[in-house]
Image (cartoon, rainbow, N blue to C red):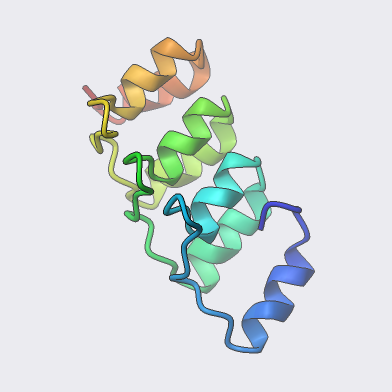
Length: 118
């Protein structure tokens, strides 16, 4: 997912690769794709493979939080559209909106405010 090759991800999943596998730090394939700005892979995982969108890593980051920190408004919009929790807290108590303010992710902050995030 991190390399950005949708065909590779599709190929792996055709051999029954597990979507719920996590790294040592708790990141799943969707969080990794969001972290590295892989919009098409995020869409595929959510819309075609129905990956769990609410998974959080060991620090409490979900795919929306990862997209916010990466300042990727397209992925933020996708996550919001598909119901990724907008009020999820990291282990430091930060919501995606707080992360957007801290990381100067203005467009992501705007999307979160429009979605009624606090």
